[in-house]
Amino acid sequence: MSDWNMIIHDPIRLQIMTLLAATPSANFIGLRETTNTTDGNLITHLRKLEQIDYIYVSKTQVRRTQSWYSITPRGLAELHRHLGLLEQVIVRYRGQMEGGDFNGR
Image (cartoon, rainbow, N blue to C red; front, side):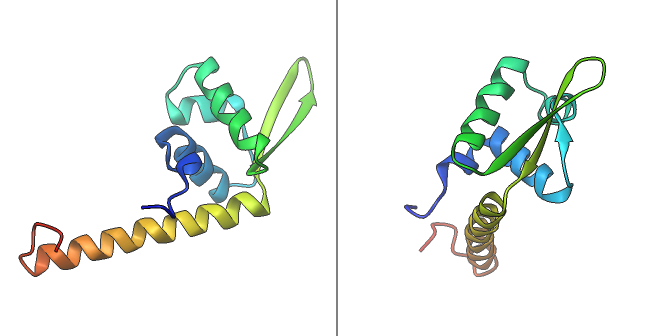
């Protein structure tokens, strides 16, 4: 499907985006625990999302630097668009299942 956003479609990035859409911000540790991934893997995904302006990072300093992430308006709009496409697939699939058409025709 050519309309899929393959940046967001990645399972870890989809988790990050949906979490950030549901909360004002999340710190690195919370994102790491939610996604159940390594620091290096999470950093790679966060940088990718930040580079294309889907998320914003702010840094705070208490005893040590802490990174907080939030979704940007662009990121939220793209997430909604992508989830709408997924919803269309689910609706179509359910309709095929109810109609007894298991081959997707």
